[in-house]
Amino acid sequence: MKDDLDAKALIDTMGQAARTAAAELAFASSESKRAALIAAADAVWARRAEILTANGEDMAYGANKGLSPAMMDRLMLDEGRIGAIAEGLRTVAEQRDPVGDVIAQWDMPSGLHIERVRTPLGVIGVIYESRPNVTADAGALCLKSGNAVILRGGSESYHSSRAIHACLLDGLRAAGLPEAAIQLVPTRDRAAVTQMLRATEFIDVIVPRGGKGLVGLVQAEARVPVFAHLEGICHVYADGAADLEMARAIALNAKTRRTGICGAMECLLIDRAFYETHGSVLIDDLIAAGVEVRADGPLAEIEGTVAATEDDFGREFLDMICAAKLVDGVEGAIAHIRRYGSQHTESIVTEDLTVAARFFERLDSAILMHNASTQFADGGEFGMGAEIGIATGKLHARGPVGAEQLTSFKYQVTGKGAVRP
Image (tube, rainbow, N blue to C red; front, side, top):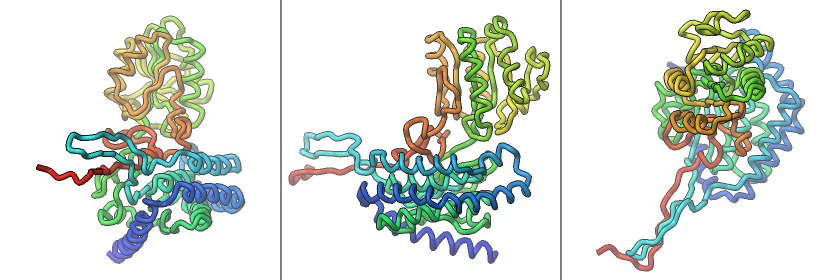
């Protein structure tokens, strides 16, 4: 009980400070927000040795905890990844500020001029697991969109997140913006998560970024509205009219480039017509790359595969494991994805534009791709510089959630002495 009370006092204090900061950020200049992010990027690079030291502590913690290789990859930082974090901050800094954009405007016969104008959401709570770069991405996007943010990173990335957060504070101070604009919950205590989910007085929306367990917990217990980011059960469908070499490159990249990200392919669907023409080449490529292919039906007869069970479909492996199944054309692929998908990202490989159009039309995942790897399901690759997550729900934000998606709108109405009869 005492821990719950302490956690509530902590989140209430942080929430009040965030609410005060949000009121100031709502009218902060675009230049001041840009300056803060540039200074933060400079600090990340200048303090990279500190960040690497902190990450070393987290890697040791993760190893002792028995994290999978894919999860350890998510957690690991090196100079290249730290450079990418700094570059991501600079990219967000240079983006157009969405706050104050006039989305639409019109005149009424009553003499009113009406504008729909972008405005910040207010205070955003971000709960995430082992990826320390989320600290920078979420902080940057919330600041750019005029929101204050309370970050609660995973226990595995505790030290790395603190080191990166210190750089964000350097940026805020340099630009004269309130330090409470970007706060990091200073405890691994899970009671703090529970209190964030209940903090309706202070937090306007919660963004969970992590596995099914975390997102399910947030959705079940949150009293604050949630931007859902469920599992990345991503499919690649090789159509009978696919270019063979393109299909090989896309399937291999979609699974193996980085297995621990939400855009990794978890299920390969092969048109029976493709299989009859080209045989087991896609499966062979994956096995040769070290992927455990859990195959269904005739595909299970391919040497090196493991027979799939029903549980292998609709499953996010986040590892060098992939389900595979033969389907009867694009309709078979659509039916399978509708049953087992998580509405994250699906890709079709085909030279038949009519088939591709049908795939796009009949599926309702947040991201649909044609002749491209699902690994491109990333805010940076969409030109957003960074993302706070991939929203798989259907309300407010969908797909990569960047700065623009972290705004709402208000109506600004101007008259010339108008009165209503």
